[in-house]
Image (tube, rainbow, N blue to C red; front, side):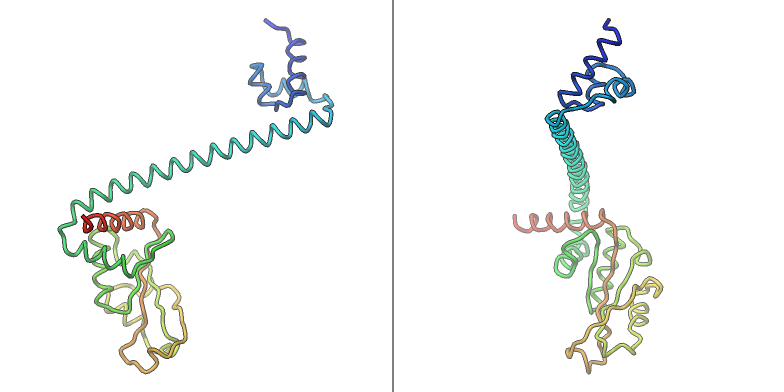
Length: 222
């Protein structure tokens, strides 16, 4: 068994070769406290400091790379599981007309990027269909979603939020702040009540819907 003096000398040599306290402790199978006591007064030359800094940077980079690979692996695994679950659901519901209609509607009018589910339309009938679809296939209550109205500022005085809340049977408290814009398109229209967006900020919901869209493309391209 090596004595403490000899181990301390080896620790100093390893420090001068560019190893960190942790690496030295691991190499000599001793505690970091012991390593610190042995090498804390060692004065490194400029060349030795450069080697140490280079090794530390390399170690940090390897750690970051390892963490990045690990995080990506977890993400891929989650996406794979989500896709497999979505495929089972698609096989179960593919013969249901309402299911395929909802997938098609979101394909055309839904948000294509980001981490939230968002569907927008100025047609109350279309909104009723997509909300019924959400409740049946996503298991999400209309009262648990958020809503936002996009409205031409020329109709600001109309009670458009009340119109949508009444027609879709949704609480007006779940409306976010109305977004106004200027346009000549609906200036004189009495039937115009803006466009309503239904929003669900859940990544798993978005993944399921995107997976269903991809499966629908494959289903109808066969």
